[in-house]
Length: 395
Image (cartoon, rainbow, N blue to C red; front, side):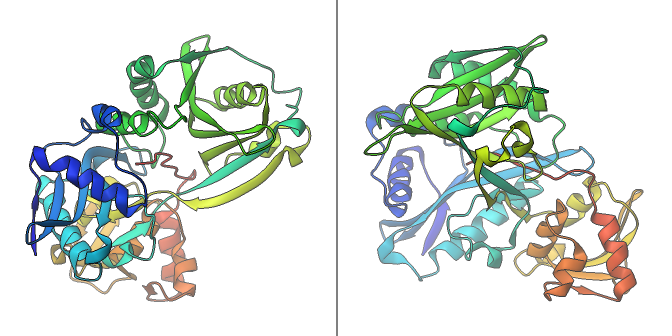
């Protein structure tokens, strides 16, 4: 098995392999006009069995905002696929090992992905770091409470204009949000390239308040065989609760719609409280958001804020240079020769890093080891965050 980065003239073959792995048709020439420009040089890997491309994976250069507000490099891993006739031959393992080595060599602190097959990625050191809610609101019950007045204006944009407006607007909105990731140009091109020619071209609404643009929604109508449509919102971002509420109000005002389904919102967002009848929120489904791989453990620990000192051991079979005992505090991080209060594998560190779980909770199901109950309490305090992290980006 030969594993190497792909040349430019091999990228469309890799794209077709990925689409086939999802049981979807290859991209059309029209779609390729945008999608074909979404590959970053030297970041697409292929696994070859002879002359056959048996698997592929790529990443984009991004940034991740960590607890405390600092930003560190993130390799956004996507388009991972293996041919159906080459499964269980070590193709994916080879790709993941090569890609992680590349990410480490680039100096990127994290890798992250969205998993369609969640059972796969823990063995490569990934863990679920953030979660989101998919929220569905029934339009016929959606009466906003009187303390939430309509504000600002909403305008619709075409795709070309959206590609000019949304990237900067998104970056302004998420600047202070822990768990958010920068969206590279390649991701924006992919988001608007997939739907071309499918009959589900996205519509883009931008909300403007007194200080300029404050939020946006990317949505499309999904119409069943009979009845009105469901409005599916792939991306909703707002700089304030008022901006988010204004976008909900606009979406729920659209005629011939039975319900509005927003695919990703923070788990602590009080959507029900916006409405007089809280049963307007007909469904809330918790989902995995960012699968995180800590590639540079010392730098990840140093970048994060801490609620107290802690001595922890990290074990990393794939990147053994990360394995060791670390003393973390607000003063920084040091490797130490000491007995750890907490021992974790690197995939479990990912689940703790953004406060997805507490140490005590994971200790209760034997996902980690703590020296004693007092150490568990200290570790809980060290990892605690004042607000729930949310990534909110599909890639």
